[in-house]
Length: 430
Image (tube, rainbow, N blue to C red; front, side, top):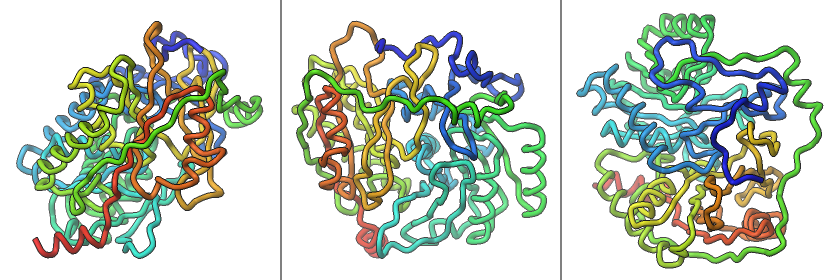
């Protein structure tokens, strides 16, 4: 396949199926098609997928572009809330896609606390609550902060997602969190807002019912043109070809990465503003640990593991600062339709066994190729935490197997996962 995923004109999903994205010209500062491209998935609840060009999920993305979009979104939140409320806010990112985006927004705001929902069920970890996402492949969102007190205040709550299609998931989350800790102010922040008028009316009605204010901010505002029969048409497509095989099997190596025992590695259990300096310092050490085992003459694609998005982004940024050519993306739980066409963003895909204790489930990685034609082949830096550092990761049909079979050289950076109980005890004694 050509080594670029840029410059789709026209979009294959639009030409073939009539799936199109349009700007509405109301409220957005960026064109919708600068931020998302139309993709497909075999999901009876929702057959289309908006593939972000700035999130670093499906497409290898310049980490500076990822950070820039998050900062721009945070700045819009700050305008809506005002500087004092923004600093005091609690930020919640939606798993799995917006865990890194939410963390970046919280960091830009200097928010009091950041938490992301999670789909990882860990024995013995208490669950504060949860909510459901109707159209997602994996629907249940769990909330696992170290203490309910992280939410037991009247600070504004900022909910961050990569896209808002109807607003229903955000409203469900607001209802769940409002039952735990009522507050008067919510802001829903997304890269793109694709709601129709009826969806906006439903959000307003929910706000009135709860007696709260719900604001929406987005970098781009548009609408999705969904043709009749799209789900049936996508289902009728031939099965995509996944897991390409190369003439040469790539090499795999492991680089353990140090991480402070009582510092959150992300927002799964809540990370506080006071953790920011320590997180930055620990990230610098992590990047300095992996840099010597990488080939400086080759570009590197840093790949995060599902919800572990922000730490890999920070490592990618640190490597770029030292002179590496870097792109960033992550794996996902969600299947999407792969088709090798210059006008389609999901041109290449990998399917593999889940490395964590969900062994009947499948996991996915898309593209994982350097976007610039003529560059040396990219090396892959896969960043996982210890629950994903399993024999299944290395077994036949696991992620390392399918990547090396495709000719990729892979370095696995293993970060010690945050222990919920140890973090709780440390915070209780601080």
